[in-house]
Image (cartoon, rainbow, N blue to C red; front, side):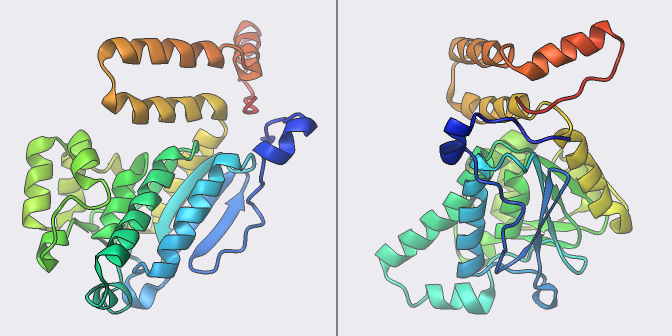
Length: 284
């Protein structure tokens, strides 16, 4: 697998390799184009803090210019995915804030979801154990979700007196599981086990806990080996077409596909098909 070739005149403004990034508030590793973010506070079931929210927002935003990252895995340490916002480091302090500060915080958490959706790389969530509150949102905002039978996914906002309309849940969750099921999940705050979440369509499939991360990374590697420019276009269209009429979507997809037809990946795929060989995609 090679990085996309970028004209040197453009590289300074369009490329920022991220393999060497040193994360402060979670684990970060890149191997053969697949990046893995590991929420790593296992003693507390990997909750988020103000600092980890902000670093996630900025790192995910930077992936728009990272030619060395072609797919992303999001996971948690110690047999759990993420328990949401830390009760002591986020929930408690929020009670002391005024409206402008609270709005700044909720806009920041929303910016994490926006960055997840706008980065061109496919994102695979590997969900084991507890996946609650903002953790459930991170899984929801990923492109693909692998779970385990022992996973427990809950949108807990009503349990603390808040609305279910948090971080895009009312926009995205109905599109994944349907309006009726999303309504039940957000109104009740109940936890779904892995098998039920898979039946609802939240998980793409279930894995054995000990194989979950390897399965997620294998799926991400498969995506990373594909046509990354075209994958990014697919992700953009999946996101943008929520707000389009069919006519608008058809025109947008016509333009997107025409751009993909100009890529070297498209030409290489044709040449490989004619030669009865496996295509080699380089993202250009």
